[in-house]
Image (tube, rainbow, N blue to C red; front, side):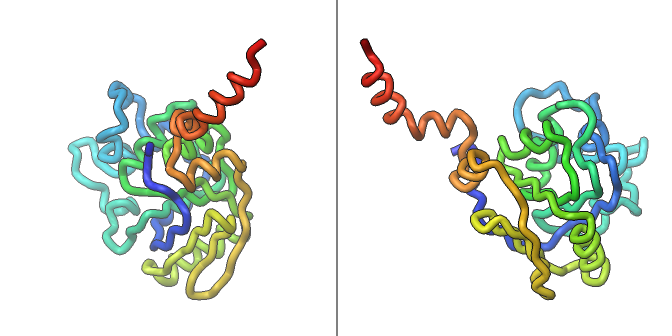
Amino acid sequence: MAYDKFTVLKSTAVPLPIENVDTDQIIPARFLKATKREGFGDNLFRDWRYNSDDTPKQDFVLNNPIYSGKILVGGKNFGSGSSREHAAWAIYDYGFRCVVSSFFADIFKNNSMNIGILPVQVSDAFLEKIFQAIEADPKVELEVDLPQQTITIVPTGASESFAINGYKKHNLMNGFDDIDFLQDIKNEIGRFAESSRY
């Protein structure tokens, strides 16, 4: 199994109400030398999190202890820029399992789903409701239900549906990457190959 199965996630959330967050801001290019999906979380939003002397910037949300959880709530157009997979790796390695935004760059969205992060695209209005709920109570919980394709602000019950590709949904719910999926259906592939012989 490539990663943990994603079914229903109930968690507090970290708010990042900044639009047009690109992949170079998520993980700066100087940290792309590694090829394994390990250690990237340390440098997630590196230039926003740390000063040049490596001391934490106190006003950045990841350095604020009142915010925590497995859900990152970003502004519109999250993950734009280059196609680097390392951006998704950094988010996963830090501990996030879901990113919420009102719009995602397609390549970032696919890279995320390939490694077990669920990108939940909501309306601008619902995104604003989420930000307001977190601002009112940093410990407010969100519930992301992948089987039902809904996201809910738990205390208020406010909810919205989200779309997802059926193949990606199946893989996320089973903890599969593309190779795992093929391994899972290898018997079917074998039977088809056998039946297709001349």
